[in-house]
Every structure is written in structure tokens, then in C-alpha cells.
Image (cartoon, rainbow, N blue to C red):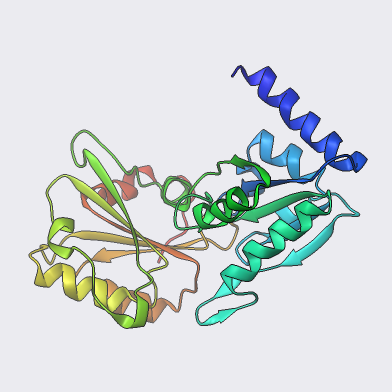
Amino acid sequence: MPASDLSDSLESAIRKAASGSGRGEVFLVGAGPGDPDLLTLKALRIIAQADVVLYDRLVSREILARVRADAEMIHVGKQRSNHTLPQHEINERLVELARKGRTVVRLKGGDPFIFGRGGEEIETLAEAGVAFQVVPGITAASGCSAYAGIPLTHRDYAQSVRFVTGHLKNDTCDLPWKDFVQNNQTLVFYMGLVGLPIIVRELVAHGMPADMPVALVSKGTTPEQVVVTGQIDSIVEKVEASEVKAPTLIVIGEVVKLRDKLDWIGQSV
């Protein structure tokens, strides 16, 4: 479908919901990694017209300020072992609000389809017969690494990238660690701050060289961004000494060596 037709379809859906005719619609919107300038034009247009916005903890204040002034705001964010609303209740709330004829935005940090449970949410919508659209966002891996001056791929260092969740359930190590130890590959761990010692231990145990370069990006793309760099055998101690805080992204691979040359922001530890 041409871009102009998609835009017309979006505007039509919003007008229909706003007029109270028929059922509402849910827009699953990626807010990107934090910098409000990284919002897509489509995301910006939708959140400015929504009746109600359900937003995550990682959506920045600057992005929330772009929501329509009279829109209902519902915080449904999650922290480790502390969920404002369980996931099934969020899913049900989306259905309930749409059935009231409202234009609903589910605003999620990063991209909703990359470790964002977006697929689970629209599965519920599809089963309930609720109309929905998905608006991708810049995921943390590309946003934070770019702002840290680390290209995820490079012809001399990495021909593939692997995204991994570092939120290890019950501190278990049930991941294909051997597959992660490959030449010319960049590993990116989301939500890996608490699990960093386990990640390092398992990678080294499965053959990763102790001098493999590592970077940890805290609060990437925001004014509070901090980057800690080191090697796989020393990064845990450096991170503990820096007292960085979540959200964090961990980049492991030879591409991290390029940061010294390509860092265009200049914030590091």
C-alpha cells in the first residue's frame, strides 16, 4: 500500500473512533530508546491524536509531553519483580478501551516487537476482533549503539548481529551460550545489568576470549547516557565501580574497539 494510502487509512481510523461510530482502534507504537527526536513521524502524529495512552516506564517525559493535552494517561510500566499491571490485565484493558470506541495508543519503549511483548498484546486484540495497527520504533540496540559510537556491523569485524534478552528468569542460564561464541559476530544483550556476572561467566566458560571488547550503555540516547567499556574479563568490576543504572544495553564484540575513533558524544567511564 502506498504511503499516502496508509496515512489516509490512519486518519480515517482516528476520525471514526473520535466520532464514536463503530469500535475504536489500538495503535501499538514504538517510542524508541529515549531521545524524543528519534520518534517516527507516524508515531508523533498518532500520539498527538490519541484519546488514551497506556505507556511503559521507559518512555521518557519528553516523549509523553507530546501526547494530546486532554488524553487519558495510564502508566502500565514494569520494573524487575514489580509490575504496575500484570501483562494479561494490560491486554484486557486495551480490548476494553477500544470497545468503548476510543483511539488507544499502547506506547512502548524501543520497538514493540523486540523484547517488548507487542506480539502478545496484539494476539489478544486479534482474538477479540479489535482493530489495531503497529508502528515500529528504533530499538535500543541500534539507537544506543549509534549514540555510543559503536557500529553493530562492520566489514572488518562483524557480519552478523544477535539480539538476546539478558533478563534471566530466576537467575537461570538456559541460553544457547555456545552459539553466542562465534567469530565476526556482535552480541547485544537487552536488560542485562543484573545478569551481567552470569552472562560474562557463561560466555567465558563456553570459549569467548577473555580480552573480547565489551561496552555497557546506560540510559542510551538521553542526556544521562553513560558508556562503560572494557574486556569480558574486567567489565563486571568496571560496571560495579561506575554505579550505572538501568536501563542498560550490553554490546559484546570486536566492533566495540571502534568506539575510541567513532565516539561522537564523548560520555564514557
